[in-house]
Length: 503
Image (cartoon, rainbow, N blue to C red):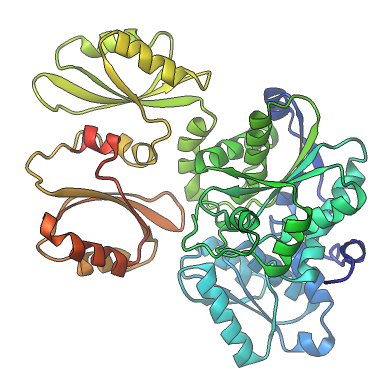
């Protein structure tokens, strides 16, 4: 058992490099959800993230002899920049191991502060393993991004500021969770002084290592993690962070990618600032929690943890934010193939604006269409599907269909009746040279690619939808190919969206 975290946090050295960030009301969001939402603006730190607090607190406590050996860290971004800045201020060398998929903007941010970057592996886990090798080779001191009491205490200074800046009633604080350092530090401090305040962690549905660990009562290692919110894409939480979160965290809320995109837009509308996906996670969690509990009134804090957004992700965020806020519905419908039928279809939509319409000739009698609509209420898509069916038009709500939103909306009309034994798969290709060639070289030459659709979303991986003709007798061999390839995949052959538009 480590000593008192209250004392550790109160005596943390962070303000040589960190700022006391403002606690600002999100007035537009507050009005919409019916509760007062305060934003803790850690996106305004010198490295645009809270991570420099923990890194500096850890490194400032090293002895002169330890500093002379230099420090080593593994990070895909924010922790790397915090360590590089701390090393610059403290006058010690820093080696940062980063995955080869790390965007150049984050590599440049480290090197500008004097850090030495070593690119290794495809994920944070790979980089972390190599960092341990670098420590053995150089004798440097490893600065863990979250599982270290001094790092946890440094992050906990955020809670100290929140309670000082808002001494009045506070119902809850929403904290993004990756490895758990921020959540552990905030929870440990708040629960000692204001135990009535709920501390609610927020994780993406596809990177929920802490939620699963708390549920099972032990640390769980995820096989794969989603990379959209790369700042919290951690396969296994820390030992000390898990211990503290199990003791002090009230619960974990899970949110999907669309909800995160909507939260980025919410923050922008109130602050004119753009957070990274992990930075807006707390806002997405607050919205989901308040809606789930049916709560109105009260005051809540959402910690905006960072703003290191890759610019080329913005198009994806913009596209998905309307769906995340339930301001847009995506429908498929079957209408007669004759003049005027589209006009008739639109007349059934009332005064709703059509945001997207995709169609391609299918056969002489019917047409499959893909349509996006602006909506005001979550219940509208289901109501509209019922209305269209009453009018004799078969319709399907695809608003929650991931493949429809990622690919089908941009690829409507690809029916291929002659493509026998076609199977459809959604892949995640690592965004690095050679990823496509690896796929093609491992694919048997007698398995024909009948469809291949790729979109770069500015993430650390590419989204691919592929159709491959595989005879039934080759099923076992094809499964071996998928496993050997090692890319995350989901078979979509029976997905209703695929069957409507690609079958």
